[in-house]
Length: 260
Image (cartoon, rainbow, N blue to C red; front, top):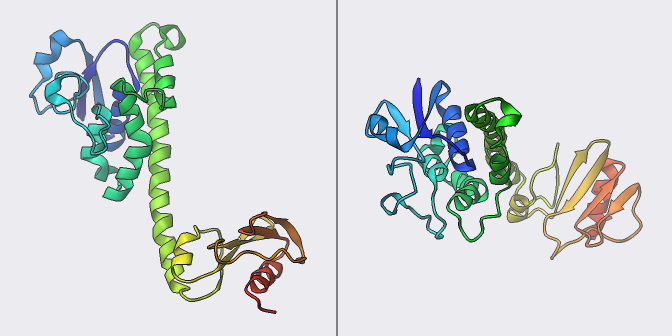
């Protein structure tokens, strides 16, 4: 069991999301919330993981423990913990940096009262959960409810970023397999950029009961504005069109390339 130590009283997204993240990576945890007079009992003791209090490695409230990202955004406890443990949820460095920029850094900025402190809705939601009458007679109940919320959100976001990572890998693999083909027929949608890189002009794929045709580079080739069979929708830029049948989508791509 991992013993987690953070501050008691009013909570914020920083300590709440830090706790939720640690629950995800360590599974079995004990949460201990303390006041400042109790720090000496837990600080510098390997048995406890202390954060957002105590002026240690995972605090950020004093000059001695302040750290900043390369872009100047300050770390809070959440950002420091994620930075040091992201591999435990399956992230590589690239995925971590995206996750930090889009999700973690805004929460850190709010907790540091940064100039863009209104950028994290999660911070606002957690702040609003500091209402004991909503969750029982104690602040502890409210805190645990907030952690439950944060854990749900984190699991969703972690899975999304891992799925995006796998989609990027799979897309590159399929695009490479179809290198040099002007028109690529797929079993589902994949992002167009890798196909553009390997010379493909159009990707065609099913979408429920119809078929889509996407131009990979609308600057150089567009879906023709000629009358097309079974057309459902054509974007005015010519970058995208939807058809009732697969054959109609293929024909549209061929016409756009000047083929019969």
